[in-house]
Image 1 (tube, protein in one colour):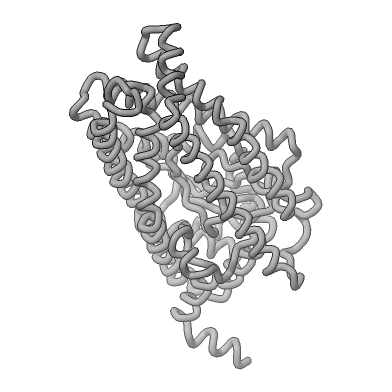
Image 2: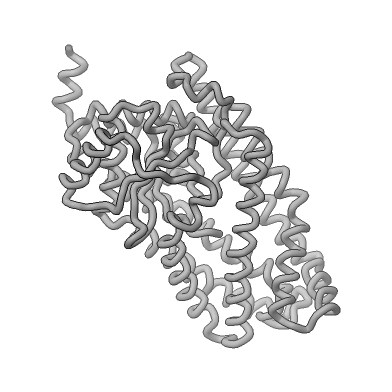
Length: 413
Ligand SMILES: [Zn+2]
């Protein structure tokens, strides 16, 4: 799991991981205006539903796989077999991770392909060729492998070295790691998938700088990101920490939106910046990972005599550790999403106050929602459980509530 340093302006459909398999559509679709056809809402609903089903299937498949290899004894057999090649605990962790990872690929790879390529093309979101998608997928896998190996080696070293306090040290290490990754993301991780260039449009650039000054803040630059090579979807984010902190605008946003609307998007990102939301997000994730490590500590201690394990530090118990951590983060997902929606609402409120242009805010939301095939009015239960951002209709409603006179005037004229 890579820490997610980015906040995205749009809804939960947007995959915010740096290795996001970008969303699809034929290249010609790039120049077409936002869809206005009557089937639009239907297609947005179908897209969101398909994404949701895929999310559940991927989750269920991953958990079922871990449960199966743990209960069947396959995990123990694999670890013992690998031990016949090496007695080195570091090498053993690496070999076990690779073997189990490969064993999951017959399930994981088709799901990745369906979600990242087939589905995105089916709904006209992706602008990527198969090979461009595959290359991104390979880079994502390699990055995951390197980061995963470093973290796993560290956790198992702690398990061997500090059997009673490993979980607290591991949690502290994860927090430090998340901060470092957030700091490095814009300069080290995101450029693996996207090209960043300083904003080219000078006139717009000046407007945006003035907006930053109005917000009483300076950002370390506004960059554009070549999203259009991969997707029709538009997005923007505040990324990085300290000297790498910057505002990133998708070129898809710059192409398809009016200057007023780009301002509304930037104002929302400035809201996160002024509210120090990256730090709040990191703090919240740190809390959940600490609880996860504690739960894993208890689970490994309790079950380490069962399943044929030789103790908590036995690598064959990794499925148990992963299941426990996944269980904790699933349990906290609704709270984590509610927390995120709260920060998003505050950023929206800040943006509306800063620009004093609710009409541009509403048209931005509408355009973003259409472009990204968002469900404008998801079922409240779905929104509560799964949405990291308020629904588009909720965000528009808030703008109307903040500026009642403005909208009354517009509707009567
Ligand atoms: Zn946001």
